[in-house]
Image (tube, rainbow, N blue to C red; front, side):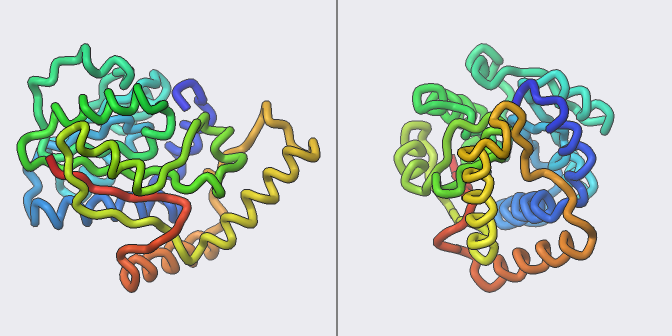
Amino acid sequence: MIDKRDEFGKMFRLEQRLWWYRILHESVERALLKQFGSRRDIAILDAGCGTGGLLDFLRRRGYKHLRGIDGSADAVAFCHERGLDVTLVNLNELASVTPQIQYDAIVCNDVFCYFDDPALHQLIYQLALRLKPGGLLISNNNAFNVFRGQHDIAVGSIRRFVLADFERLAPIANLQILSSTYWSLALSPLILLIRQWQNWQLRAGWRSADQPASDVYFPGEWVNQTLYKLVRAEQQWLPQAPFGSSLFVTFKK
């Protein structure tokens, strides 16, 4: 999604409101709290930070040492509008960026889907190099090919994941999976129905594959709040779901 300014613009406007981003940001914070307790002095890097919604969220939660990198000049510009410390870095070229600075936690959300296996091996390895011993790598990823649809085309995603993919990749970078869960199980039937309908429209020519629309839009306050509460309740009652359109994984070095 490096050159899709319109998509970045939607992210920038909705990251603090849309139910999906709120759930994701809170999931990252819970992972940090579980590993580091109430500390707010830990060094955190958001690799592929987009328009900076997560960094802004963590800043408002009191975290002090935050940095981001992203391969899109548009995304970095939006981050600078938020007053965030974000640098333009192509993650394919991360090996050329000095690993001397190490972090307590690195977040890499919805980024791995843009990399084929050889490039992903290298990226995860380079991220692990930048973790302190015992450091945490947090990553959300789109899951299960059955959910592939118009959104994937719109944002340029080339793949989806299952947990076995990360069980295979983690040892390459000397990482251990601490926790994992798919989400949201409760919304899976609705998401599947929407994605299949979108795919049928593309096949029928009712929609153009050259101008796909992503799922990043505000559905209205009542629907947005209802979806948020539903997924939040699911996470409380079922902290490790077996199925869902996203896969949230934490790794320890």
